[in-house]
Amino acid sequence: MTANSAALTTRARHLVRTGGPKDDSSWLEHVLGWTLVVVVAMFVTQVGWL
Image (cartoon, rainbow, N blue to C red):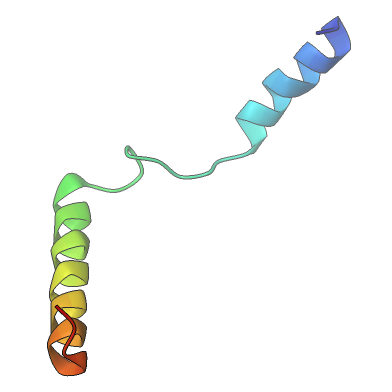
């Protein structure tokens, strides 16, 4: 890796935010996860799979 590409990589890390585990609170993540589980369960029940 050249010094120029290393500098660009470092700069890009500071500019680009992809979201991650620290962006939202943990309770929101749990609520959304369980909501997804319930919606999938309702869909499977209506379709008749499994």
